[in-house]
Length: 80
Image (cartoon, rainbow, N blue to C red):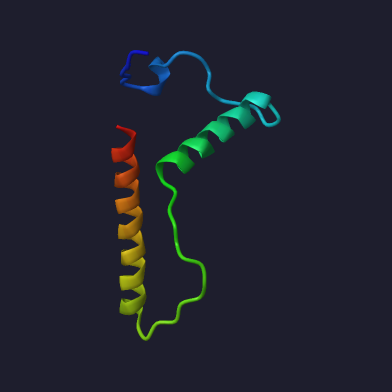
């Protein structure tokens, strides 16, 4: 399938709007969620964490964020 570029949404073909209750809406949502699951999959360890300062909490969150970024890059490398 070739890649096509558009200057504006109005140049795109067809109507992508789905009405509530339309089965195509549910399929579109499902495909979007599956794509997000394949590409992001963030992980945060379960539990409650106590911190002495907001800086300590931010450091832990940054550690988790970096672990998620590393896992994302690792998954991309294994697909190639």
